[in-house]
Length: 639
Image (tube, rainbow, N blue to C red; front, top):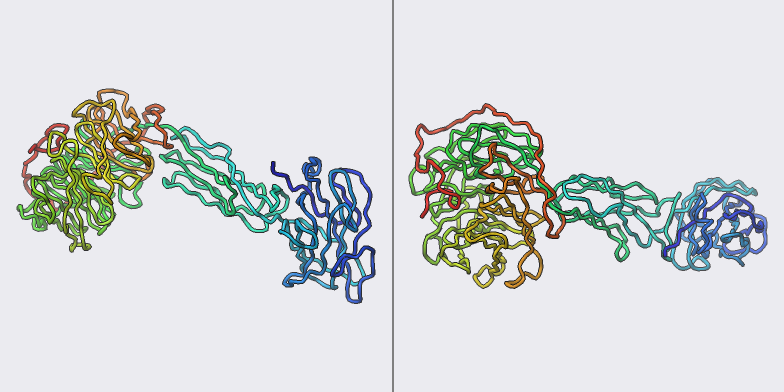
């Protein structure tokens, strides 16, 4: 058990026992060493006097009285002028030392030091060894004016010298989604393992480091200068796995971890007049704390607390949305148009003359999915077998995937895409996962080659690959429409590197149309029911060791079909269904790394408005190639 430091340096020429009563020890006068009897101060000098009450290592009385602050392991003390290295005096402290006496619950010593007359700063340090040896236990700097041939009494509070530290949390868990303020206790110990207590400070402040990949927690302060400093860990209620607080000089097991647990769902309504599919969700551009969504003729913006603004887009079905480096959202619809919308709703279409596709003045087919690229452009998959990009100035370029170097043959129909570095990974509905390397920046960016990995369970068969996300483990995760989930390590992007499992509780030809990823896991919406599945990447996965998967009811109605899904700017997973009227978008909040169910579904209030907006550069007539949705497993015409 740690022992409390429970003494105090008192200004006195008589002893203070700290436990009541006791004899008065004769003072010890020091001048470069211990003098057993008093002696007059030399000319030009005076004396500095203080008393130290050292608590017994096992006695409770001294530790319960204030003022406090001397280690039970104190064996000697030195007094040095600030800026000097040679002590004015060093004295041993103990029951048999000169100037010391046994008192209830400890030993009391009175120390008198010969010091030069005048104003000086004195450094007083205690040690766990005799004659000023061993490790420092506490220290203080005291300014005093010593008068010639006079004893000057000083008030002194020692500051503990920290050897090791530990953090204790008032609570280590709360239900996820519940904002909380958790008390943090920071304990510091000296070289002998004694707990350092006040009223003194620490000789050096303790620094706290918070490790939380989600950003859902924060500390009220990261610097602790004294025992009893108030510190709070604040949790904002959003998704997270865990947060660890590590103090400087941490002892073994000195860190503390906070882990909210479970899953929670909050639903927000969009306009009741929409009554249509939400095709796509995407986080807003940098600084925009919102989730954007696309539907038929509508692009909407929902704040992370459910406030909705919708803009009439003049489009058909908007299938692709992504934040651009220019601070706007970029979109694509099923008529093959590409454009941008500002945060206030101004829509600009790319001019027909800016489409460098080789297929005419528009996309070769239509944009399935969009993501921001590492080159500052927005990249997209084209349902016709193309991959493309649009610059922030509206220049659109496409490349036919089967024509890229490395393509082994056969057709391509890319759907969800994601980047790792300069490699664009694509879920290919022909039963593949593609890795497309890009080079350059700005308008100079272009694919340089492609690697194709077949879905090992089916190859180019009945199970199409639709969803793809980069997991928190750094692997490429994918899903198909045969209730399978799988991963491919980027370092082993081969068929041999693929791991794939069937998802229990789903039926053949169910599909995770899209995937999303956060530090809390990989998430997919089941397009045949009301569930969002949370997949837990973990070490040691193998063909026979599948990841834990938790089904989370996203909607109260079991016949809802969860379709669009994304990670929002708040770190939570956002999902949308396509059956409920009025349609709604849900926020899925997940905590910890254990497979547990949802805590419930709440319908939260939010404001919904239809905003007026400006549309520019709109061409006069729609091509009308894809006037309607073609089924749930294919967001466009089938092969």
